[in-house]
Image (cartoon, rainbow, N blue to C red; front, side, top):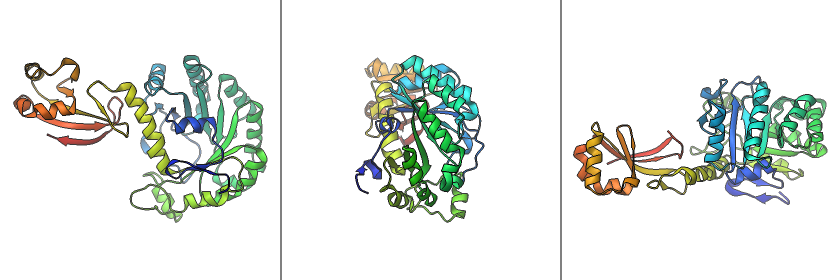
Length: 348
């Protein structure tokens, strides 16, 4: 791989779009605008829960514009990646969110869009005028060998005339070897993602002979090798490994969010999760009275219904003194979002 830069967690590249640069920093919000899609790619990893017409900003279910803005502030987002499903099935929704984010955060807030459609010039013009900075096309894998004869060639050229950074983003599978000359001739970038198993694509993947690298990873055996074999001749290429998405992109985003949302008594881990103590009681007033008697500072605990959350070290220290006033005590580690996924629970 001549002139390639080795990135973190097995990624490599000789070109990074601005969208990828911000993802590397954990500074891109993922705006999922719909789970509806008119393609049926066998490798699609989208969960059954997301295959509906719903909107998510990162893990937050969006019910209003305020939800989107709040999520962006919560993670100090410098940009947004719009994805789905097929986002352009809800074009007006996409245009609305581009305008919303640009109005709130300024034109420097970088926005990129994934689409599996060969968008028309009219649509591309509308996206550019709204403020879209970068577009990544995902042509059906059955077309990769003759892309120059498909509407995607025209769409890529049209997108360039609108001033957007233009690329193709596909999984690193054998058919990707056909696409090199096309991306060089078009002078667009190519993002190759390590192929992954998911609950929803596992049967289709196994039926085509794909296997896991090992029992600890969702990555497909041979996907990285496939990328390595085709990248040396490409002028603008980026291979994004499965472990990079989890170990680097997600971790950095979690750390940014944790730093913005952690309470004074939350401990932020190196992975961006939060650790704190939890005491549950049917008589919350009695429990609070005991905490005051024990001189626990008021800013070192918070009340949530019949639950008191506090510094985990405080709970460990006073567990015996408050045991009679509680029916459950534990130390919690969770993602740094409201109602975030619990990673571990340790009973006390």
